[in-house]
Amino acid sequence: MVQSRRNAKAAKKLMKILLKKQGITPSRLVTDKLRSYPPAFRDVALTAEHIHSHRANNRAENSHQLVRRGERKLQRFKSLGSAQRFLTVRAATYNTFTHQRHLNRRSYYKDFRTESFDVWKTATAAA
Image 1 (cartoon, rainbow, N blue to C red):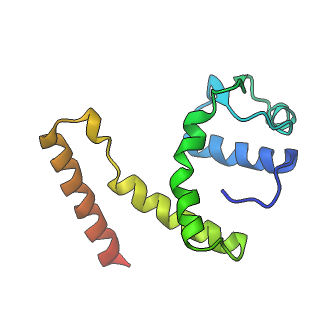
Image 2 (image 1 turned 90 degrees about the vertical axis):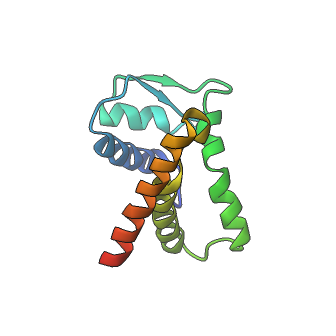
């Protein structure tokens, strides 16, 4: 989700969207040290453990590197709307085609890739 501000209102909106997507209440939340998160968590009434230690957020930050690289190639987005549209499409294709190759045997990986391309063919034929 792309937002122009990182205040408590924006954090609360983000939390509501993420919780609705997950469908379950998390036991732990890992964020950066932004001071607007604790008030937002209180407003949403989250009782989960809030972790914002030194390196706990590295995994989340590293997942955004590809987005940042793509953004640099496009010479920044002109508006928040165009960034949101790009990221929505990118997330859908990335999630469809990205498989943890190092965690699967080659035969499973090939099956996953074949299934991904079948899903993509179906999705593009419908559009």
